[in-house]
Image 1 (cartoon, helix red, strand yellow):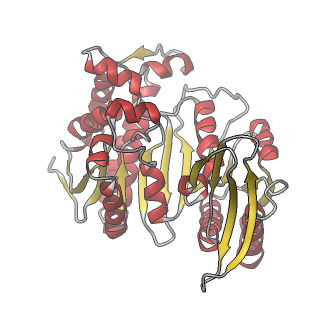
Image 2 (cartoon, rainbow, N blue to C red; image 1 turned 135 degrees about the vertical axis):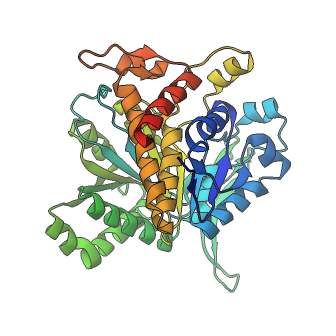
Length: 407
């Protein structure tokens, strides 16, 4: 078949370690034989981020705003150990946090369901879609250490430079410590709320939103109030017509409700809560490698990514020439999500169809018993004996089914 032509580039953001290896193999085995890939490439590997003083991350985010659709590989957010390992100039911030801050929007994560993969929580019969606010909080936080005897204040200045409020955070007279500040913006919270309400209507799923406003009586309470105001004014009647509900509750109550539920809900979380809970939900459904993730900004930009880490342990085995069995499903679905959205925006039904067939071929490969090692203990299907495949062999098995589907 002739290769599918693209009109507008995707913004391609390469990443780190084993997922960087998978990234190239996915292109070689599953994409380039069928699509004339048109991308604007940015290397977000840690080495290049350090070399460019992280300017490459900002450039990639700005390009995503320009072209509307991006696809991102998993990347390292360095800690002290990584700074030493990679001889970095400094402990660079999360590239995901930087991109989300620039694009401003909501991250929607949903489990990728394959027949035979049984959730760890057997009551979860339907998907739990997690909406994560993608701006502010600790990801844009300012933090430092304080010496014994220091005092830390939260200071608010007016536009004229006059001090409007000065709040003592901590008097460190009894010993040294640490201090952190974080912020959010009303406009970003409003965008988050509307994105969640609209997505719930699109999926016809009830929406639950949770914070800890009983403890954070101004910060978290502001989220609660903005959601409530927008719902009452703009969405209450629409939700009633769709037969779905909006509920606010405390984050600890939401966790308990989610565990007891059968699924089939859109769960909206603040930035940090969403970071933690999305991994919990993904793992409980089977694997972090079976989770789709897309950042949707209020002005119509999309960034698709794998929701897991860079699989460091497998990467070092790979460097030593050892065979690995690394789950690539989430990375495949990042590419298919981006290609489908690009095809939808550019009026290219062939590109959309290709993306959907690649997703189907990926799931069929697992359902017919060929999968990476992490899925073997989770797979139970009558008459099907699971067979472990190496990282590359799994992609080749998907490629064979894809080719058959495209004939």
